[in-house]
Structures are given as structure tokens and as C-alpha cells.
Length: 265
Image (cartoon, rainbow, N blue to C red; front, side, top):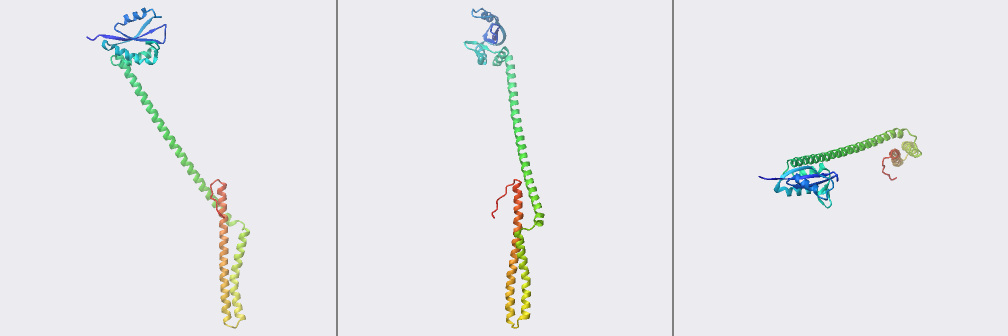
């Protein structure tokens, strides 16, 4: 028949906050021995004990002491500055191999650790989801801002173009435009009058048949040159008006804050 031993925990009212852990086969006898020592101040009281096989008691004591080592009192191998409930949980968990209470404590600790790990994983997952949602919101806000800016730019361009159309048609012509218009009108008038004058001269002034053809040829050449100059004058007039309209559009865009490429004159 296997005999049993005990791992015990003692406390002393003279030294609160300190527990003493040890092993014995007779708890009552061992408690009397502790209190009979001359160095003992106060009275040791047994607060907890667990049964372990006698042949495993030394290993069980090592495991119990190791479980509380972080709270060890310097110079006192079996004493620890830790609360009683904490000491009971730690020692019981260390003795889970032989102690039913220790197995339950270990299972409880493992459950708490698993729950804590699960909560940590859920927290990380929640943070990832929140971060992804923030990124999506940021991207959507940026897309909307770009779309709104492009729409405003297009509307402003269209407004400026619409405003320039009646302005170009109804504005007072500049001195440059008046000069080109007058030159074109004069050349067209000259183009219309010269052939008529040549015909009158030929009919009423010359009897020699060779002279009329020379005069008519010269008049035709002058008329062609005049016509070309009139066409070029009107073309320059239209180009000048188009440049004025473009410049007003560029000025409007620049006043609105849109980047406008500079044009070489």
C-alpha cells in the first residue's frame, strides 16, 4: 500500500504577507516543530495542504517551491512574500500530477489562458477590420474629392467657355480688328471695281485689238492678287479673335486656381 505525504502552506500573523511551504508525512507534528523553534516569532498556522505519494514528495516540494520562486524571501528557502490565495493557486497547479485540486487549478488556468488568447485574437481581428474599414473610408473620401474637383473644374471650364461665346460675338472690336476689317473691305472693293474699269477703258478708248487683251490680263492678275490679300486679311482677323477668346479662357482658369500651361506668343 502506498503511503502518502503532504505539501503544506503555513502563515504567521507576526509576518503578514509571507507564507511558508514545505513537505511532511505528519502535518500536526511538523507544525509543532516549526512553532517550537527558538527563532520563531509568532505562531505558524497551517492554511492549506495537499496529499502526494510519499515516494514523490521531494519532487512535489521542488515543484511547489519553483512555482513560488519569483516571490522568494532572500535567505529563507521555504518562505515567500505572496498572498495566501495566490500561493494556494500556484502550488496546487504545480502539484496537478498528484493532486485533484491541482488538476482542477491547472485546468482553470489553461481555460483562462485559452480565453485570454481567444480574446487577444478577437481584439487583433477587430483592429484589422477597423483598420481596413478606415482605409476604405479614406480611399472613398479621396475618390469623392477627386471626382468633385474634376466636376468643378469641368463645370468652370464650360461656364467660362459659355461666357466667352456671347462676349466674343458682341464685344466692341479692337483697333487691330478694325484695321484688318477695313483692309479686307478695301481690297474686296478694289477687286470688284478694277475689272469694270478695265472693260470701260477697253470699249471706249482702244481700237487696236491687241491692247484690250493686255489690259484685261493685267487687270486679272491684279484682281487675283487683291483677292488673295483680302482672303489673308479675313483669315488674320479670325485668328486674332480666336486668340483673344483663348486668352480670356486661360485667364479665367488661372483666376480660379487651375494650373494653366503658359503659351508662347
